[in-house]
Image (tube, rainbow, N blue to C red; front, side, top):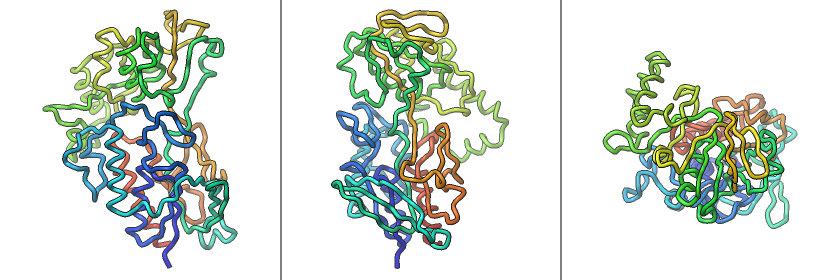
Length: 396
């Protein structure tokens, strides 16, 4: 009898997890709380609770050559860097090709996952789900958690004194959709991750002025590398990987930073960070240096405090008549369906063996897929994680 595996979420990681279950002769059942596949890459005009939210113009930062699943290449006529609608199309044809949709229960919320009384012998779980207002309990032999980590916005208002008296509009980048409604506004974007950079650039084409506020700066990568090739296609090779792990890290960082500064000197643009390039996730943005040069985006330090209409920065400068503040300050993640004895999250950090398995379970029948922030595409990594996890489940 095939072992039953519950897959939580039908995004990129969930879809490939279903397929890996089938490849290993397991019986998957996927629970997706929304009405469609795609997770992060399903654009909606308004944010939905429990689903990641993107803005209309989002283009992925990794090339199609480096992000596709190993046994299903992205069609030749798709662009190298795909718009979110193309990524969703790819997931649809992937799910159709491998007949995955029949294993997905849409509009079904996972309420709780608890160990069975005989867990130490069987490794089984009681999974309680809810659909159409009715709850149902089912026994599963293993769990694949593919719920993502871009759902719950991190909005650190306590770190910005005066925001409660600010008379303008403020919101998390999760709620941003398009720039038209901000025509002629003076806007501060707080945070210099990929979303902060993208939103700053896009708003700068309609706003009166955009201020990009950053605590530490960031290294900026361009999607298009030497000779017009995608940067991840040129930069991810066995030779370069061997060099990175052979040469001293200080030399490797210096060489990479020198190359980036040849395109534009990060210090001159107010973007040079204190950390080395391979110490933190860089930003991928083709247009930000141009917008800074044209003056439509001004780089500022951290906001010290807000008044009713202004922002005071750490360097003492003041910008008056601020209309909008966008907090591009990242996300929190949690596993509300698990007891804390299974997975504990502290300060947005979680301890997982090989970034996959909770280390304290008597039986390794839970795997978290895709809870990573790689320098590159997440899809191939999720596939490898799911392959490993399902083979362990099979042999239990």
